[in-house]
Structures are given as structure tokens and as C-alpha cells.
Length: 162
Image (cartoon, rainbow, N blue to C red; front, side, top):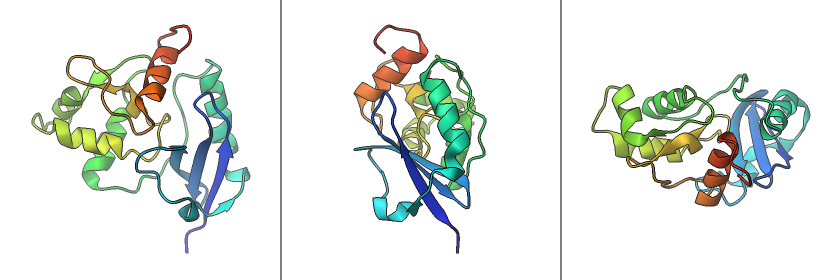
């Protein structure tokens, strides 16, 4: 039986819940996040397996880290995992559209499917789903809320007040 554990850390976006299975990060959730699993599924609270993830997140929020280097384990469909892997290639401070991601996947008509996969990303911030915008650059849905998306994009672009 896999060992599920979690911890909660403070951040400029509010509390973040990190979830691991057998010590590998499988989830990073904000409070009131859409598609957040039930808290009862997170396992026991244990800070130890999360030391590297917490340190990297602290460095990210302090402006000292622009690219995460953590082992991750995704639970999702093959298409979702393709989208989530592709999200990790979007550079810090940049944005791409859902349609552009669909093109990169070789599925130019799959922008909506990319959007759905993006919205179900279980490891927010580290897998930067906040960097995906609408076709005209507009801020469209974000599981953590548009205010948080705006904050993250502003922060990464160095805009005062995030």
C-alpha cells in the first residue's frame, strides 16, 4: 500500500498543501482550489518528505528560483500527463495560449482539451499552469482563482504588487 503524506506551508497565495506518495510529490493545492481532492485523501501530516519542495517554493516566492528541480509523480491520463509535461517547458515570466500548447502537442484542434487538462493539473505553481492564457492573452480560468493567477504572472514579470 503506497504511503501518502502531506504538509501545509504558508505562501503569499495563502496556505499550500503538498501531497506525496512514497516520498514523491504528487500534489500541490491551494485552499479553495477547483478540483482539490478531499483532505482525507492526503494521508498523515509529515514535513520530512517535503523539505526540498518547501525550500524551493520559499526560494521561488523570494525571487531566487525560476525553475523547479523536484521529482514529481503524476496521476492522470496519458493526454493530461503530456500537457503537464509541456507546461514545465514554459519559461518563467512567459505565457503561452491553450492553442499554442495544442499546436506543440501536434493536436491543433485540441485547445479545449488542453484547457481541461491544464485545469486538472495536480501540482500547481511547480507545474506552471498559471502561465497559460487565452488566445488574445486574456487571463482565462485558473483552478486557484484569477486573482492568484494575476498575482503569479505579475510576480514573475517583476510587476510591483504581483
